[in-house]
Image: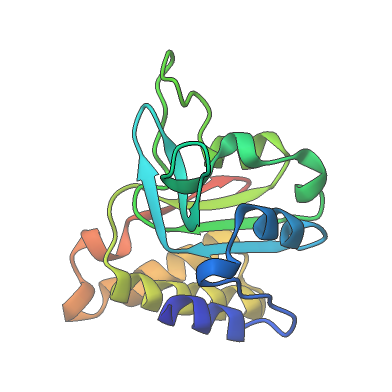
Length: 177
């Protein structure tokens, strides 16, 4: 929640969907015409099921609904320039033959979103919030996506509490550098 609040305050026209208002339909509706999509929350990453966990229940399975690759429709991502998937293992790579063959990262890239930031492993919430604050500060100052990630990594790596690569090296950029 702290991360989402800080990120939304970085933008003048941000729309923060939280709790029960963060439904799949609301997310897809809000994606239209937006340049940046930032998700701060939880994710699942397995060969059977991969995506962002929503608080909404899927009526068919009675499990949490997942914002997955098959949820995206090209018209909703036409304006999108950056998708930041700030949750554990959002950079999960599906293997050929997995039931969930396309990941959300791949889906954004296949729909021509030029920059997708995702995590390679489980992340620490507090340090991730700090990482994202530094990332967006640099990005909104004109630093570019790749340079802003690097700047955030260096900032966290320079602090004793987050010097271990576990804290600063989890997020990577897919797409254009």
